Image (cartoon, rainbow, N blue to C red):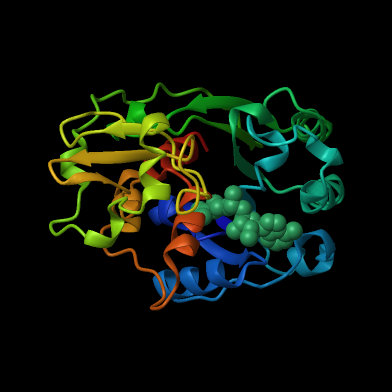
Length: 285
Ligand SMILES: C[S@@+](CC[C@H](N)C(=O)[O-])C[C@H]1O[C@@H](n2cnc3c(N)ncnc32)[C@H](O)[C@@H]1O
């Protein structure tokens, strides 16, 4: 596969791709995402607004596969549900116009469950059908892949070749303890009174548990509904970005640029893919 990695973030698709193919070009508008991508993958994504990239530019990469994770806020439980009406869907709409004119041979799109049945889903399915590609709509959660973390996602897989759904492997999730840093950072503990007052509504887990809640981009700033907090003998703390990265299945050597603030790290991770789940979606091609 020769891949266009669209909305590339920290490069989850590239990690999941492994030796199935190579990334011809990655695109993302966000500076911190691109710096993180460059540090880990040795190539700098094109810092472009995808709503304005011309067909000729994308075609010049001679890619046969699009792997994409467009912004999920228009389809999120906590978002505004405006779908294609949301201004953040502009780039997706533009890519659908490019698809109409020059479709790839294969495509995998990842998003939240609310994407299924949305106007964007209908538009993508219409484009896929119009070009005679096969389509599979998959749903999976990282907790079905041995990870003690909830991350329910949908994957729209399209290909020129016939597709058949593969069952997720379903191993029992490991305990959270296996994903924790060897040395805890004191600063992760909730100490300030304004933080402690949130204890009540928090999703609290312990090292022996085999589940944690989905981490969202706002984990560093928000409390309730943003992900799990770890209860230890010393109190209640956030998971570190490295621990969240492990819970997403990112490789052990995954790094952030020095000096990138904690909140920016959580934001990138909260937008990211669960790697084993994305790899399973790619297995279908
Ligand atoms: C859901 S995240 C993708 C995460 C990615 N799959 C990963 O593994 O980290 C969406 C990404 O799209 C980027 N993005 C959003 N709108 C964009 C646009 N109009 N043009 C280019 N990039 C955009 C954001 O900066 C963000 O990194």
